[in-house]
Length: 174
Image 1 (cartoon, helix red, strand yellow):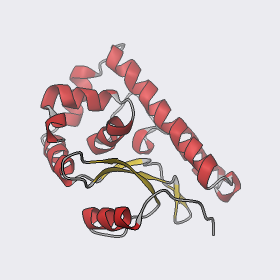
Image 2: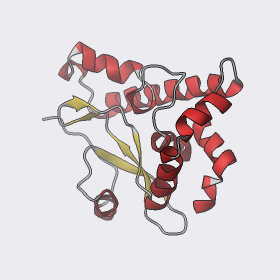
Image 3: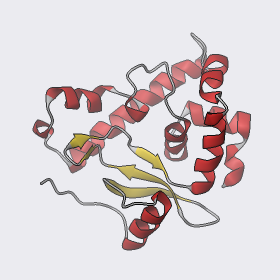
């Protein structure tokens, strides 16, 4: 069993558990708290959980944001945003590619800092962690899930999150 130092308190653990409705798996730390309500908004998860790669580095835990973004996704906006704002050769698309790569690089760095032993992974699993973007996506020209992009946006630079704020004013919820 691999052990590593985590950066969360017992209170963080309990709040995240309550927000998720289950015990969090692979919790490394709380990355951002809601400025008004104080609950965890985004958690960081180690990239190897229960002996398997876990490509989701940042997880949105804020119930307010999760609900709002779920409505947007349900209304088909992933495809609409992708078509309208991330068209071929657009600056947004160039930034999306960079942000997928940044996410991948952050995941590899966290693996190196926590798990450290790449030999634990079969080559195909190692490739997933080393080469995929936000949410484990292979094609850096695409958007898989607004929740994942928005979580990344709250702790780093993410073009999809910027567009969501521009189009839907999601940042009004915090």
